[in-house]
Length: 185
Image 1 (tube, one colour):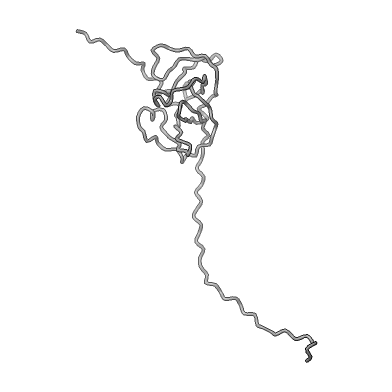
Image 2 (cartoon, rainbow, N blue to C red):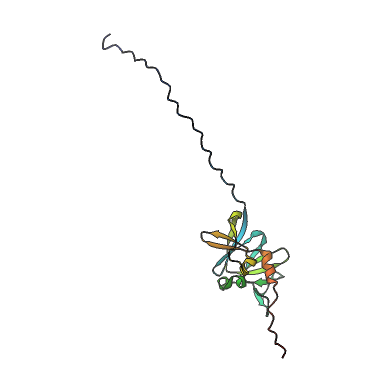
């Protein structure tokens, strides 16, 4: 054979690849099912944020004139006329203190409960947002505010007090303050 002739390629036997040990794959942890959500209307009063299930919200109304009621029950500011429907106008201040004192905005959220409706004085309507059911927690601060807002939605931007329309209406039915009685001498 001369150097000019092509050389035959050496024959090599193909070796099967080394078998890797078989290990069972670790199953991925189950993905939790997303929590059901319930749409809530989010709004502010004073320095606090609140939410109501959207099914309890009628509408947001601005520039309604309110007639004050003397000796009204706690939380009741007066009454408003919403296109011929007379509604009690209420404030959240008795349950949340000065932090829920409404500002100068003349804005009302019409809250419809099982039996009645009220016009709740608010400062700003934010949005309608889906609230995950597993994100609602009982309010740790028992007391008056738990009467009307039994749950809290903890968000990075701050707690949102979740109101119950029926509980709010029930709390407004409280008896008006009675004048002190003079003891008979």
